[in-house]
Length: 265
Ligand code: DGL
Image (cartoon, helix red, strand yellow):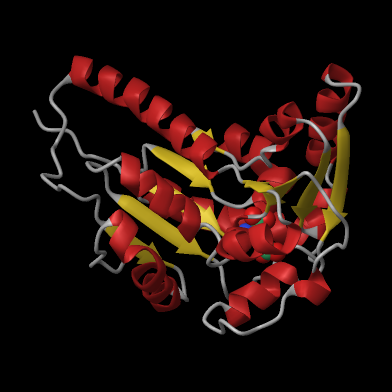
């Protein structure tokens, strides 16, 4: 008997998680992907934790109704605020977003970590930094809350001449960690601005999703044959009130690197 392929849900406050979706789609070509961007309420970074939780759980209820086999919180802020609570409530495995502080620290020198205010103030982020400081006592980790940066990227993405420097911390780091998926759109500009290596967590998230799916699919094959999507490129269904915006941004920014997208939920 054929089994339904439940697909994978991706969530972000807006367009930032599209960078994660694109990275995962380069690696995974036989799943259905759902993208839920909550652009209507973005940016999340300066909202109270309770409001963020409410929006994230509402999106995850949609994933649960679709019976996804796994989900990705492609948002550092939502992960910092509620990934553990999500994992308690929903039956499917959930990949969270975590600033790639460790690989940057291993490289040595002064490490700027750019995050939203909510991530910066979260216990989860503080715990991550203190774990790494304990292990690497010489680590020079300098977290910065970049108020307004994610919201400005959400609004100005296609304005190539817009000057983001007033939103950035000044200084001469040896490495910069992008602790917000929106910031990844500025990766090249930040590399030029700081003149150093820039780290983000997208590859790590894609690796974790691949590992989860391998486990799930091995188990599913033991139970019976999987329904093949027969797709060479994973189809994407965009969800939420701003699905057209996210579909347009994805096509514009990532169609070449991760295949053409042609679906809307
Ligand atoms: N893209 C998000 C993150 O990774 C959220 C940005 C925001 O909405 O403030 O933190």
